[in-house]
Amino acid sequence: DTGVSQNPRHKITKRGQNVTFRCDPISEHNRLYWYRQTLGQGPEFLTYFQNEAQLEKSRLLSDRFSAERPKGSFSTLEIQRTEQGDSAMYLCASRRPGTSSIYEQFFGPGTRLTVL
Amino acid sequence: AQRVTQPEKLLSVFKGAPVELKCNYSYSGSPELFWYVQYSRQRLQLLLRHISRESIKGFTADLNKGETSFHLKKPFAQEEDSAMYYCALRGYSGGGADGLTFGKGTHLIIQP
Image 1: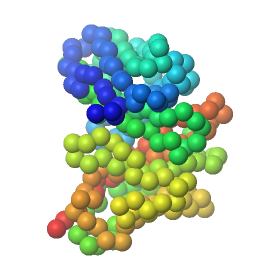
Image 2 (image 1 turned 90 degrees about the vertical axis):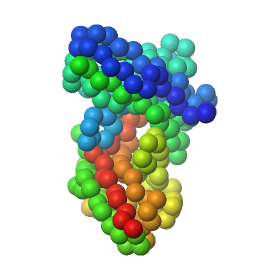
Image 3 (image 1 turned 45 degrees about the vertical axis):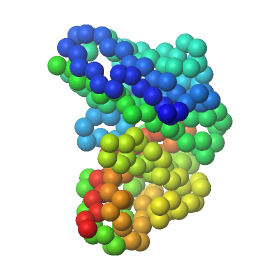
Image 4 (image 1 turned 180 degrees about the vertical axis):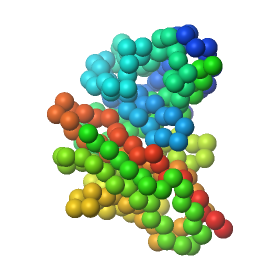
């Protein structure tokens, strides 16, 4: 499968614990995006990278959230001191270089986080 | 602030009937609009984008800037069209914003 992959697919944790998710984009894609989707809602943009540079962060990304893409390939999203409100599906997407919107975002299967 | 509104959470139509999924947006600049679809147990995927003016799987959508709408239409629904449909907007906020703003989605059910 050469699509976007995410690990783990499911994560159950206790409130207050730290969690880290990984996203591997399609290999030639230099842009990588993180979204969060809660029940009954559409995906909400969190942040995106162009290569290793984090270019935009949503106000949804609180201080407890941090994302990295150290070598411009895979990315990690860490949530510190998790809260029950962090329970959601975390989606990763990637797309090819260029500024035109004809370059669509390809989504991964998501990581479902449950905070007890 | 940009916003996408999909007024219907659920839409149920019979096979062969026309389908229209509504999408309205709020954005001060010149937006780019998309429809994404998520079939059961599959990942989110692009269905169509306004800039291409294409028809995919019989679906079309026209951007109406006067009404700030981007409704998705299909003249004859098929059972395999049952899925969640999300309207999304890509806008520019001066800093090269590239993230998509999604609506809450419409669950389309095609009854046999």
